[in-house]
Image 1 (cartoon, rainbow, N blue to C red):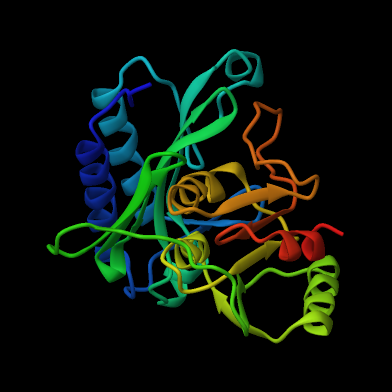
Image 2: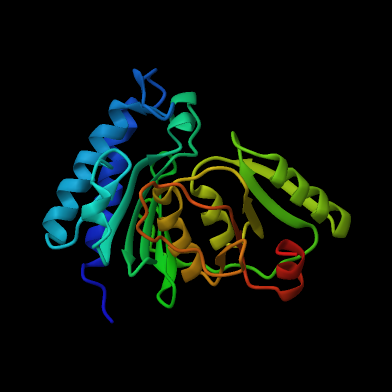
Length: 267
């Protein structure tokens, strides 16, 4: 089944949203604390408005759920079979701190599964896009886009983890991995962690701390297009059902599937 939009148009929308956010980067933006204690800046709101307006022009019949416009009643959302899932600025804390590890995430969800995603990294002038069965691409600046692929797990096993979020469960998993093999751990912000797996720079991203649906969907699509996978702790493909809240369960993202690693992770 073909995609209901032009891929280049969606990629351009993500590029534009990132460029809109950049003038606030490293400029000490005013920070507002939302009800869930997460921060938001004028950059988040401006990028969000541009994405929402662009998606409405691109696909007027597909509804939109965005982190900065999430007040859609569940009674309405529960009937959506296809929708856009958007995080206009993932890694706002990284953005505020002056790190370049923040992203723009736009994903198409169909029947509770991610179909396609675009991840922009504005401060690095880099864009990733793809989906399961569709392949994945990376474009840096004005260079030609290049296909990207996950690598087979190798020693030492390279792990990426959140720069700001961990848990006792995640530490226990790391200890189990360390007992079984050599590992290297790198802390990375935002959905960029998935993209490092997708381009073969890392092997594993375990997440045993809170995330929301808009944090993960677009980058999951990129990773799956590159040959990787995102699994719930039940071993099934990570998915995006309509729920009354946005919180994800825990998950494990990997590069190329490896049965021995899967048994170790999901034991």
